[in-house]
Length: 377
Picture (cartoon, rainbow, N blue to C red):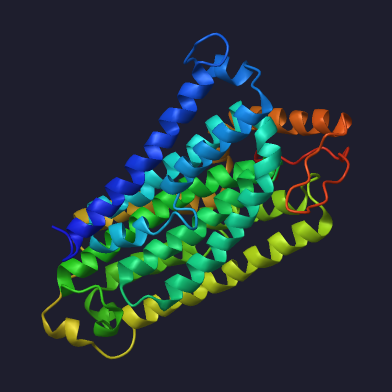
């Protein structure tokens, strides 16, 4: 199974992830053997590290986890992997692998290296908005259904980066919610794309068209998944993205002009998302029947409908009540966020805030940060 260039895509994927794993190994060994040797994550988080070592290890881990998260410019393996892989493999890539990169950033970079996070957080935020806009524009240019969804994943991971860099509970919680939300929604869309390919034997959107009449169940499920992906209110995509926006806008760490630019550029991605998703729906399911419909098409089978529903129903349920998920991870994320904010306050009080890319780091705000749990209630 797989496309004509599957060996090229697999080789590229292995090279990217293997090289990234070397950076993880080097970074973890550096942390473990600084001071008393230990691989206990709780011990590593409490260790004091030299400033230069912390910055170098943070950079190494950010490159490694950024590759797995498909952060620009380390993202080029993802469209090829999705475009050539079979539907089950694409579901695993979108639902699991990308999320491991963000998990690593939270548990290693933010939790263990909070001082270095002060230096790199603005860069993460900038890369996040680049991912959002670049991924959305590239997605709009694709004619292959799965490659369009792949670039959509790159765009959505940009919101995760912005949330991780926000220095707020609600922004960090929104990033985590985006990980879970996108994992379910993207997996459902890739699964439905696999069903469409199984019937039509093509992923080329210009060759499709008019499939809504032949496959109404697939059309309805694909529409629901697209609505969730474009952050329609009442879906988990909306809850996660609005949390990231609120966290960024209320961050006490950045200057007002910097926050305004971040929010405005991220909003461009929000505008582009329905354009490329609804355009894909129009090309594949509306209009006159394309060449791919020359064969008699069958609608989704009950087993296929059940699998897609198992992924989409939770996305809708979480959209109406985010605490279904936030209650699971909110305590840990609040602790990580509090550690980062405390580090910021200590460094600010000592008058040693770094000047990064000419950004103005304002004084610490006394305003209590929002939390995802509070927002959900």
